[in-house]
Image (cartoon, rainbow over all chains, first blue to last red; front, side):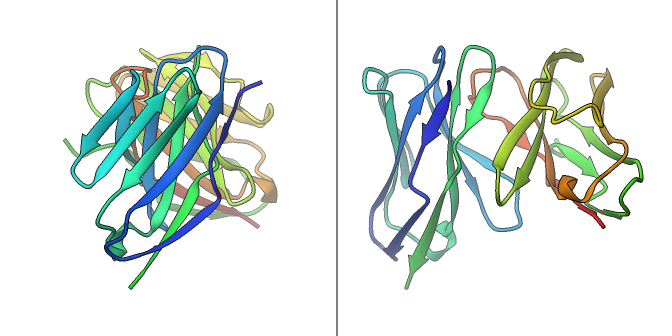
Length: 108
Length: 114
């Protein structure tokens, strides 16, 4: 079967750094993506890793290790507006599969 | 570009009625996806199209659901007859490729079936 696992909830304070992990099991692998979704909003694309290593986009970074079937999203200098749900998504052989999401709560 | 456009934004209907959700993808995007999101089941892929052709509809819950894409700029998701368990937010998304390098989601349609 195909599955993605990520923590259901993470909490942190403003200015801190938080890491959201994602482990996957899929038939075929063509990349790991991350999406952010605020309450009442639509998912928005954050980052993509097709190869092993770190991708950096401003305060957000994403990492992939294909040999470990593992990736993470790193959020630095947390701000209140970062409170949202974060989804990892894996492109398998024929479709994109989304994880169940990690709800990040940032406290002042 | 205006992004992915969905209509209506909210729909309230009674059980047994037909519901039609509409989507206009971003111009030039070859892939169009329909998702359903609920608290219990999360974000589920229902069906996706490539160049207007349905590629994978394995996520469509049952025969009451159908989707069409008559041209590159328009798609519909129809539920007939609707049931209370169909209440959810339905998202349409489009992308240039299937790789996951950026699907762009519409604002969603919040469907409530009474």
